[in-house]
Structures are given as structure tokens and as C-alpha cells.
Image 1 (tube, rainbow, N blue to C red):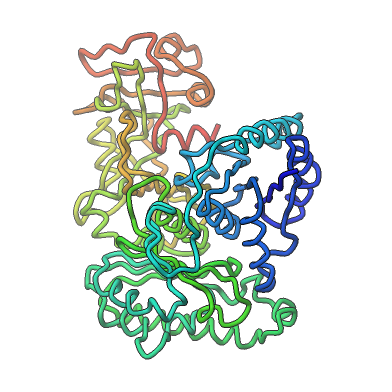
Image 2: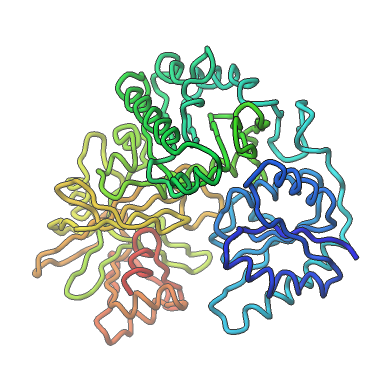
Length: 535
């Protein structure tokens, strides 16, 4: 029989899945299931994993949770051309770089989900093992160019010291620098060519630097863990304090904009991400890893399967997850003035008027070809030097000809296009209810712009005698009941449904505008967030 190596997070839940689902499904499709029992505890286990991947005939990979060691093992498997079956509990958890691949999606809230997943794995395993696979060259060990093995992989270095000079050169020329590490003393001090000194003195004045490092309360740095690893917890904490002091000094002295956050991740990666290249060192040695572990250099290629995109996405998600619970808006979005000038900050308003949610439809949001009317909350970009509150008041006046009072929210929901990150408490006179980072794109165009747009969603109150009227580019004003708003995301709500509604929902169009009764009405931006979170 052939062997199938199972890559998965090593927690109690997935061990149970292995025993009850993964293993039986692989056995029925003619494979002997194999898994590693204790990854990343000592170096010999890592070597065993490499051997298992190399010797197996098929990979079954559970990618739910964006676990770094899972992606590391999957990358090794892809590098040597192993056929792989990927599974995930939701589409949202599939990284952008893997969306072009076939992934089995399961929903463990369904009654018969386990049986269905077993059948899907059995079928996919049989198909994957019988498909022809072109073997690639090994990923690690040569130190030579590996272009073509994985899109964007340029070179491997023996250790961090051997590529330090390249990293210092990247610091001098890059406009965006992202660094992910753990204890940090070795990383910041480096050798005689200190990375810290270059971040302070050699960096471009227009550069933005973000650093993610371990915090003192990291659950992987407890006294118990240090004793089991024959290490010194006081030394760990001392190194973290050293890194924090260095970074705080860097914020004051560097010519660039420097921001930092602490994460609670385990030991898997040290990552340097620059404009065009990333340097990645996996943590596979229990001691002296910076000296012993190879470093991968990957290039930003624009391809979906680029390893650069994978590590960049990983950093961005961990940055979001590490947002302090109490902070100000600029701490979250960073570079307010520059982002405002680039049109990457907008304000929107959640307006309740006479117990109805008020939305607008600009002309550009009407897709006549496909018969879709998109609606969003009143709002738009903030002007140069304009404050958030003045901007949202101006936008409401310009779009519906009403004066508004802006309310402050006790808690702000921090959201992104891939995650509901959590609640934060903002230090501001007027805090938005929603703070959302999304791809900057036109909703009715298929080609999206990969730059990001921050939207501050405020709560606004109109005077009871207000008479909203569509202004300028506004095609129509929609006033929807909670039921109608909920229907807009749960079924194909039509224009005729609003026109004939008995719950007070209404549609006010500009003079001369006619919306076809059979056209669909769909929310976008803050309107979609409100519809999904408040109904």
C-alpha cells in the first residue's frame, strides 16, 4: 500500500479528526495514513518530518486556522512535487495564494459533516494519487537559485548571518519594511552590521516600518515551557525587554515612521518583508536557530502562488490580530495624513431615521447590465487636512441634504476583509462604531485593486423633521426596515419588494431616474457590515 502523510495543527480537536475522519478516509482509498506526533519539539523530529514528506505518495493537509507549521510543511511538499489534497472548514480561511487550488470545504455545524468529509477525502485522494505529477528540484539545501520550484523562490542561504548584508541593503532602499520575530536580541543587534543601526540611520525618510515581536505574556514563554526546553525564562524576558527598548528608541530616532506591536505566536518564523523581496527563516532548531537554520529569499512576482504573498498575508493578519485593546485610530491605521492624501481613508455613517436604516445608491453603483443596484451608507473620502467628524457631516449634507449629529461609540468593532478581529476602545472624542480595512475596489468590477481602504463607520442622528433628498451623483435613497435589510443579504431582494413594502421601507429616486422592478438590491461596504452584524 502507499503512504499518505497528514499535515495538520497538533491540537486535541485535529487529533480526533485524524482518528475518526482523515485516517479512515485515506485507508479506504488505499493509503496508509501517517502523521508526526510532536512537531518542532526537537531538531530530529523536523528531520523526520522532512523524510516522511519525501517518502510519502500523497499529502493530506488541513489548512484551517492559518497555522504556520502547516504551511511550512505544505511548502516543502509542493517544492518536491508531492500530490496534495487540501481541506478547510471555510473558504474565508483559505489564503489568497491557495485559492486557485482545489480545496475541500467542510462545515462542522452540519449534522452529517464528518461522513461527507470522509467521502470527499476518499474521492480526492484517489484522484490526486492517480494524476501525473512533474517532480521539482529540492527546495532546501543547495544555496543556489531555485527559481521555478515555487513561484517567487529566488535563493536559499545557510543562515541569517549569510544574508544579513542583503537585508541591510534592502533596509536602505525599501519604502515598506515588515519584521516578524520572537525574542529579538540577536535580530536587532545582529553582527557588527547592526540591523537596528540601519533601521535608524540608513532607512529612507519616506519608509514605513512595522515590527511584530513576542510580548512578555506570550503563553509559549512560560516558566514551565522554559524548564521543559532546558532554557532560562528570565533570559527570554530580558531579551524581550531589550527588543522593546530598542524599538521604542527607534521610534524616536529613526527618520522613518516606526510602529510596533507584540504578538502571542509560537516559535515558527523570523520574517523580513521588503518592497520586492522577503527573507524567511523557519524556526527548526531548539537552540541557536539563527546560526543553524536556512533562510529562504522569495520575490514579489504578482503570481497567485507566490510565497512572498503568503508571508506578506501572514504578517498582515498577525498585525491585525495584535491590535492593542486600548489605542487611538492612528495607532491602528498609521500614517493618517499620507493615507488621506492617497484617498485610502473614508468615513461612512450608520443612520437610523424614523426607525429605518438609511442608505444611498450613487450612479456608479447601478449595474444596468446585470440588473443590480448596490447601496452603501452615506459617506466618502476625507479631504486633505479635514477631520473625520467634519468629513462625515459634509458627506451627509452633500448626499442627502440633511444636517447630522455624530454619536460616539463606547466600543469599536475592528474588522478586515478576512477577519472580525475584535472590539477595541479608542481614545477619541468621537469613536466610530466600525473600523474596517477592505480591498480598495469598485464593487461592480471584477478586477480588484489590491491596495487597502480604511473606513470609519460612525453612528449619525438626523433631526426628526429632516427630509432626505438625493443630491448630486446620488441615484436613489433607500430606507429599509431591519427585516428588509436582513433580506438584502439572505435572498435576492428586488426593487419591487421595496416599492410594495408594508413595513415602511421605501425608495426615493432622483428626478428622472427609474429603477427596474426586477433589479436586485445588494449592500456594499459599511451597509453590508450593518446588515450582517445588526440583523
